[in-house]
Length: 395
Ligand code: 3PG
Image (tube, rainbow, N blue to C red):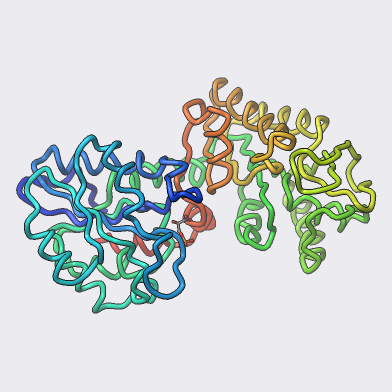
């Protein structure tokens, strides 16, 4: 597929799909601008060529029609700061006003469209809606890696209305880095999976068992493993309908020669609160009335030692409730080990929303090989699925 470097944007209007699905606090301020920063190289390339930019994105999951808390107007200030120039805003992504604002754009100017998902046609991949959007630009650029797994109007369907359709620098770099853990991987290859739910990660875990040498399972999902092995887990997270699945998974890992490593101890708490009473428990020995909220120190050491032996590292999902300072030590220890292994020459790819946020929270964003902006998109790509947003750019 072609990328922005293959074209000159001089005198052109580029309609750019970005993923500005960023977190906002209760006052509707942007709390993490990673995805905005990540889109800048593509936007600046177009502007420096002498083109103008029309940005389109979704924000959140509005249910039916416009909702103020999902308005992209809340990110204009942040975007203006990042770009160091004024940004115009179209209060609807299609229609006369958006068309007039786009027609009036001069070279070097930027227009941001209102949330695409205020129209239900976006998620349906509606062809007429895609056609209306396509009127706003001369060239289609897709730089929304985080949304590339969605076959939506603005990510996939729209491409057919353009002679020139290219991917942006972010998309290009995400795909290039993901390839490093997909093809010709340097071994030992370790995957570290965490986060709350096994249900979201079944496919990726099954795929990884065909690829990795070592698979570490931590975080909320590990308690279902402990339970399946006959332990007691108190009030910890449990996916009762996945008990058989995890037993099978352990068998599969053994049959395929994958070293599957589970936590050996855990930080337990009386409540899901930073200041609740805490203690340590061995794996599968959590008393009633307590819940596991982080991996314990022995586990952190065990995981770190395995990570340090590796040449390729894929990390998805935190080890505990890292947002609370009482339960962030396991995730931090893993992050530190990933950084140390990277310094020693390993390739490390961190992805999937929470683990990227954790790495950034601890200030390690620059010390790992690549932090993906993709959550579900990265996982689907790693599962070997074709991403509709990428496929649509094929000639
Ligand atoms: C994400 O944050 O993973 C992407 O922006 C996609 O959002 P979605 O899961 O609501 O489609």
